[in-house]
Amino acid sequence: MWHLYAGSHKGIAIRTNAERIQAAAKPFRLHPSYGTEDLWAGNVNYVDLLKERLRVSMMDRFWYKHMAFSWEGVSARDLSPHG
Image 1 (cartoon, rainbow, N blue to C red):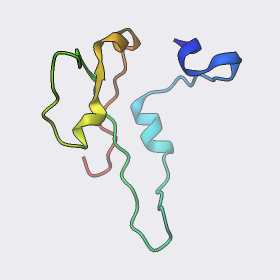
Image 2 (cartoon, rainbow, N blue to C red):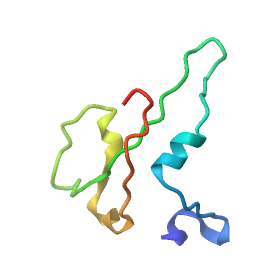
Image 3 (cartoon, rainbow, N blue to C red):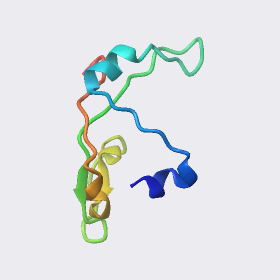
């Protein structure tokens, strides 16, 4: 997997869990006058995007990847403070 995302030995790995990420995340604003942004995470669904058309919202599209990447095993819990 590393050669796809971090060629030339430029990547790092962080070992953690959803609870520690949520505890470490500080409120973030894109601009001082804006409200804080939510931190979102969820389970990734692997589908054959060549055969199946996604009929989901723009936000839900973040949770889909082509089945060719299913070996990654990406998943996380909902980290939204409003979740």
